[in-house]
Image (tube, rainbow, N blue to C red; front, side):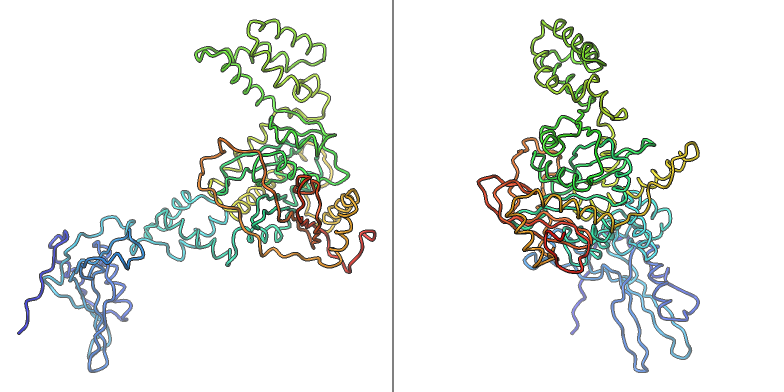
Length: 597
């Protein structure tokens, strides 16, 4: 005796029979055409159909049953076996079904429907197509557009606008864009981690670069310089601005930018570095990398920075003959803030009055006599306010040669007495990076794209200037990589000659034994979980770099020594660690000694 069929539980159905919407007067020429028409009709009415089963007939024909995607009966979920605990099941036991069958006595396919409970839904229908994973998505044409716009470093918010205007029927969402962009990225990584990928990219694009690793093989410092930007810098090596910024990467590493200036008043990025911290040792590492790309024929006129103690100390050690100018804009801001706090009355404008009054006369003094007179007047005028006088004397006047016009006018700085160019470069670069959680490979790719746009702007301004002035031949040509590598190699040879004897002996032995190092052990830095910007209690103590300091050109030379002095990445005198230095050299036909170099 047959049992009574179970009653279908209602989950918000509208009791409407949708089977008449699937009646079609004409036959379909192909099975796929019938199935496609049925699925599109279902979507227009707010539900989806899926192929549930096939029923073979005795004459060889097969009937296909299309059911609602919520057909699976509702059942308690076994969370002990669930992989994704925060997901839901859509199955509610919906009985809606239609059949696609082939004609028996003539060619063609037709759709058969059932009225009653097999034409109704016991659940709510789809209202917003964008929120349904089977209705919304990216078509092949949409994916092509996403890839092209992603290669141009377009933000996802702008990509989704273009998709919605061009492919509205796909019902795309910004989540689809993020997912497909991440898929493209992992396909390009091809099994490599971000650190290995960025090393591959810098070599492929001809960058000059150095890396420093810690004891675990993780990259803790990275310096990169675009070859065309270096060509620009060697053409106009006069004034350089330097500064660091945060919130550009997922490792909480400060990003240092080195900015140059063209005669048409355009900025260009000479090089950039990711550092483990802002200590004087880290800045010294950057400056040593920077001095290696200068060459013997290049002499800087001025380096403009803000008053960063670590950078100031490193500049005095690496560039003792170059004029170091402090940014007057940062100085004035610091004076206003500090004097206001010393005065203690928040409603007063004491800081602004101090800056715009006697302090402005001190900064703008054109001669030593004017400076002495302005400083004496300031001390006399604010004799009632000793803390303010002591602050500017002990903090700034001791560095008067770096910002007072009586001294800075003797330096060829072309009016660059502030670091606003670097601040502007920070803002421009962050528009390209636009994320504080970017990985190494993403940062390199986006900065490289920004440099390309920057160079186009420079070429445009130079060509426009040629219409007004005769400036000679092209100054932004293609890069002669062989000549650049030889100049870099010769500078490294000169540096080796200044090293002690043990260093030279170790270099000679290693050059004869090995030329090509392995980069397969490189790892990306540990990811920082806190992305709130610059750490408040950041320590200036550096970590010991046990790994390697590396650079690349056409071929490589690796030097392994044990020294107890500061070499390359730096060590204390009481420590002895093996240190690897890999330098960029051109291809050598045969091994040679240091004297033959």
